[in-house]
Length: 402
Ligand SMILES: Cc1ncc(COP(=O)(O)O)c(C=O)c1O
Image (cartoon, rainbow, N blue to C red; front, side, top):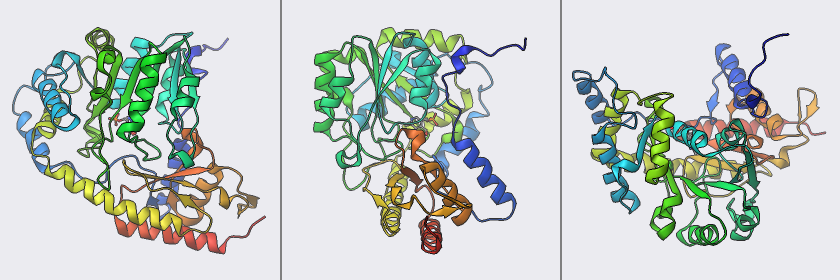
């Protein structure tokens, strides 16, 4: 008998983007100029003073373990920044510094979910939410939303999804993949349902909250939960705001009881996030914030170019997103185009068509629970956005249909 793998992996999807990335790498290796609309990270460099602080930190004691949940200065700086930009003041004891925000979510999964539990996740969702739930033997309860509602879960649909087995709810605002963000009143309506109908935890991923456009005001759910604060967990990090994906620093802000559990989970798995990276994050969070605004306004201009470009593709529909750096387009009108001798019939087919025919890398919506849609990242220059859209328009115009 061959040795088996743990059964918990049976329910978990490997990342679908891997095949796409491999094909894109293959094309690049053959000399193709592939437009990178698939990426989930800013193309900027972090602020120069962050890199300088990291260089300076190398001369101090960064080669030793730190406290499991992070260096005190960083936890304090996270609390100060949360007060300044999110409008509420957590205590350092609530903060767990992790190896990216994904790790913070994974720690929570280990600490909270078990077989029999349900975790409510609105679709379209970020790919890792349901997979982490399944890894822990719990069940994701997916709540669909549509483009007409701005890809936002309605209070009625939310209420229907809650059950006595609901252990947690995961919201992401602004959202990956749609860029949609809940307004203050929309969020309040969901919080009311949650407080009245459920004793579950509410996990809110605010990793894109600094990247909002057209004067949109992100209001943290932490300012509106009142006496349910002991069931609220916020996820955040430096990856998107400061263009620091590779430094791998994120954090959770949780009620003390949960924070203590996260300390235990992390203490028996990764121990601290890399000390040097914590020092770089400390500089980012506590230093001048002008660079954040520069990157945000650059994304805002690119967003207009991307959305306008997508709307120029015959039949493609795309709503203007409030935040993040993704446009989420309905591409179902392209079904039937003949590619590789077969009609396009799924969003994955369309993404491969864009990649192979137009040399544009994207992510198909099925991965996010939204078949028929494609996620286009605009974390690339306006010239590249225009170039990629023109390339798609050329291949669509030349395509034969079934
Ligand atoms: C919604 C969302 N949450 C969390 C993460 C993970 O962030 P990090 O790179 O800090 O682990 C991502 C990254 O793409 C994301 O899009």
